[in-house]
Amino acid sequence: MEVQPDGSVVVDESITFSFAGPYEGAFREIPLRDEELIDELGVFESGTAYRPGASAELGSDGAPGTFGTTRTDKGVRIVWHYEADSEQRTFRVHYRLRQLAVAYDDVVDVNLKVWGDEWGERLSRLTATLIAPGRVERAWGHPVSVRGDVTIASDRASLRAIDIPPGNFVELRALVPRNAFASTLGMRVETGTGLERIVAEEQEDAAGYERDRERLDDALGSPFRTLLILLALAVLPALAIASFVGWRFGREHSSGYDREYEQEPPTETQPALVPSLLAQGGTAGSHEFTATLFDLIRR
Image 1 (spheres, one colour):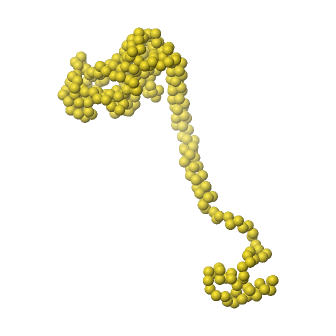
Image 2: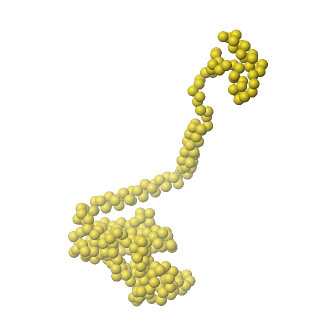
Image 3: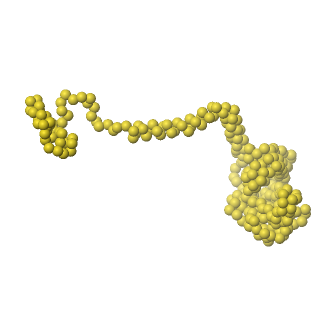
């Protein structure tokens, strides 16, 4: 990719496929952030330009040597058609991005996704080179979890990455002095300085990844302790819920009466009525007569 003096970015992607069997089409999803614009799209093979106007629907048919483009929710999709059968072919996808670079008072931030997350196959090797109109001050590769490195040589930043899993993206980010550009027509402009903030952001991102990796290494190095922690996290909440339910619903409600034995009858109910009340009906008999007699004697 080449950053122009006005901040626009011209991109040429060379994608090599090793086909096993017959194939007739490929596609590339080009993500666009808010305000970003894309033009000059084209597909080339061995110096020959593919003709525009073909369908850009996934799985569509088209004449070999043609391509089509369409807008998507995330950006632009480019689909090209060919005929290949158990062979290796290299295609070059060309386009220009405007409003991608962000100009601050001190630096211009160029952050481009050089490999998209739409690919369903593992990529064995990826190389990307950014050429700037002036020297490159800083450069990084994203995400930190991808194996690879970034090197700077004067006005170039080069990224190498290997063994990229399916569904993973790769970004190359570079900072170029603001005074290296002739204009800002092809970029967005933000007030204030950006160098210190962006460097701090990248350092925190790298530190966060290292912390996560150390936690993972520690967990793998102490599997018994990790198992105990996981069991505690699973069991303790269940015990707490069971204890609360037992305390709340598994005991008798208090009656507000705390006497263990009585010296006097607890109420003034007539003795002859008590058996009938307990039995919820019936007529008075010998028990009721005896209870009434003792009540009269007690009085």
